[in-house]
Image (cartoon, rainbow, N blue to C red; front, top):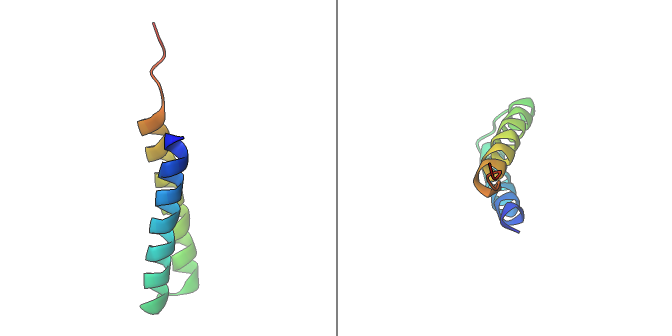
Length: 56
């Protein structure tokens, strides 16, 4: 469930950044690159913070 919350939060964040970039007249291919980078960072952060440590 925590990962789903991270995912929803990052999707809202990415949408806001992409919209702001669109309003700033950033070229579309740069916006797509930014979305990919932020999506990757969101998945990495979500997995890192919601992963349970393996018992040793």
